[in-house]
Image (cartoon, rainbow, N blue to C red):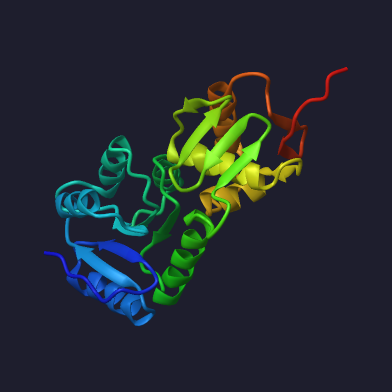
Length: 233
């Protein structure tokens, strides 16, 4: 069962098996001018997301057939990097970390306010939509194309996960600037799940390994990380 609204700011897919909540979210977002399509289970969500491009998916975790984590896992394996905001009654730190690590962009626990959801959707869209001009970011021999989501180093294509891509993009938007773990958590994961910077350190290590040498991501001890070219001595 799917339903679309009129065209507006962008195409959103709202997935929830609770009819009242699904309809309330869709109605409020259409009122704000978004084109909204709805789905009541994971199977339908996968079909719709594979059939047409969406700007963002609002995805319930606890669905009757395929849970939301599995839905996003399958989409990522298909190469679809559509931004996702999880909705769930499960609010443990382990669940939040799992959802964000899988490539989710935000995580809201039920019950939630529709105004807050709309604000978070706007934040994620601003962060993930490519700019109107200058889609290719360059630093040294690293290039990141914000329209194709491709990353290359010295012309060689590098396969990054959605989270690795967002982390590199934020670093490349701030070359030479030391970014704290808190800043990276806020701008890349857009969620403070206890203030732990361990997930940042883990993904920095992943990026360094994939980008290879010479290193362009440097650690400022006890502060954070910066993108810079080490000067030869």
